[in-house]
Image: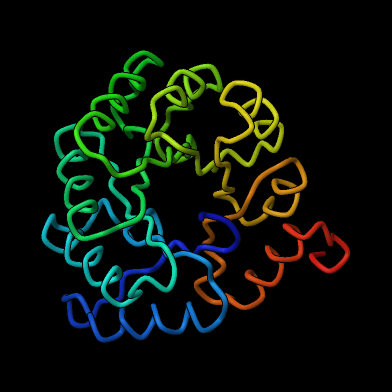
Length: 229
């Protein structure tokens, strides 16, 4: 269900307010260009700077605009567990296919703290969770062992890996199992990530070159790395 090129959507604004017409047009364009999923209010969507109302409006409008044509993975992360649960429950309510949950930033939790944060979010809603590991921004790196513990929970289904360390794919496969979804969160290593066993990329570049990103991903998933390169 989740594979290929999935843009981490920008959040359009006009005069300091959400531009919902532009957002709907963006969704249509992305799907027309071959994107296989949509990821609103992630890092590229400026989730830390949106109000709760803006965040939830963007998720709901993207789900509506997509209309079931492609799955929507709603950004639902926070360094505040209760806030993250709110976003997850809203994502589930409006019909998102999954929630993207970032490792808590600034707080610098231990590995056990990371486990408990994600377990609490898992237990609070029925929507599938994709872990978002981005130590360059969150200043905490979830280890493959911790990820493996979380992978035992039924609704934690995968990871967006933005470490840019392609050796993580094999390590996470060993820790989490072959059915655990692995998506790249780093465009520069997306081809190599898939060559190691990844299934796609939640892409920043796809905001401006969605067709090329979709074609590249499709080629790698077909084993045609000559075309992908």
